[in-house]
Length: 121
Image (cartoon, rainbow, N blue to C red; front, side, top):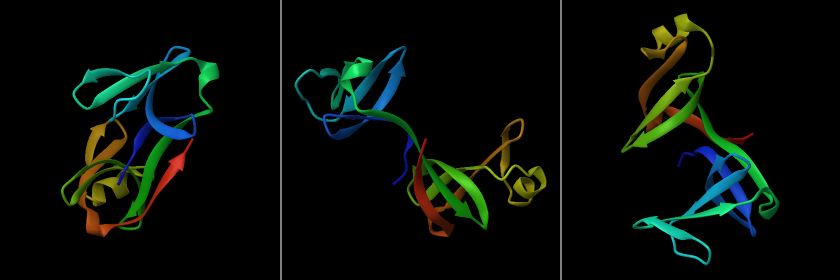
């Protein structure tokens, strides 16, 4: 499992969320009171700042080949990783692509990835 995005705690439950100015949109896969269906199986509710308990950014971090990474995506038995070590020669040595200036990403077999955990900001 991997997560990379905002979450909000509302009425004791955690929801995927998107900040929208001073409000926040929360999402559910099930219909519930006050939620509007935006597409089949996807429901949204807009909350004011005083309606929710907490907002945080959750990111999944890991280690691959002894170096630190963010997990960006999962596809079957592969993980899309972004290198956070800040050393371009190491990134190139690992065979990563320069996605943007100084930003290195690549696919790694999930079985080779270790120490996966969620970091809340």
